[in-house]
Length: 202
Image 1 (tube, helix red, strand yellow):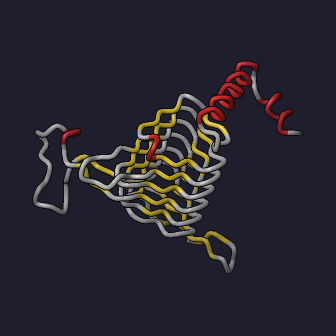
Image 2 (cartoon, rainbow, N blue to C red; image 1 turned 90 degrees about the horizontal axis):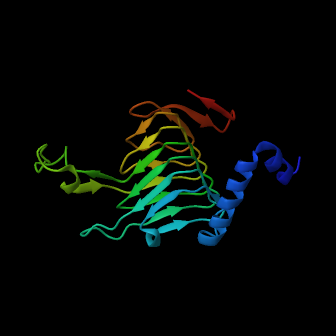
Image 3 (cartoon, rainbow, N blue to C red; image 1 turned 30 degrees about the horizontal axis):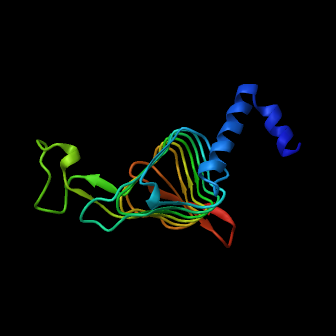
């Protein structure tokens, strides 16, 4: 079945109209992308770099905000990245998503926190307004060919190595090495790929 026949047979008339509307808006505003499904919410567009072949579901939210006192951040999305519905990426320090990453729906990726709660004598107090607390955090890096499951949260300072898989509902608070499967809250490695046996092993 050709690509056009598949699109025709798998969509209702309303679905086809919405698809072509999204394609038109994508090519008008984001010519590098393959398709962006609107609505999309972007803050700090000049600090966001989207690679070729980008695909997004509906309700994508990209925030890349420059805060006084920090170097200007950059949110970089590599080539052929696919992001599903209602994903939120919040960037203040810097987030890099490399090529061919697949992100399921309702994923939250952030490089910052509001407040200081450990590792310092100058802790934020609970009587202060959360949005006015000191912004902390560190850059996030997601390697090539990573697959991130539904409802995953990725916290500040995390690096996820190339080719790894993050299971649904996981909270990633520490680095995940390349070629690993990590699950849970906090996410822990449960399998790694053995190139000799070509199998995922515990």
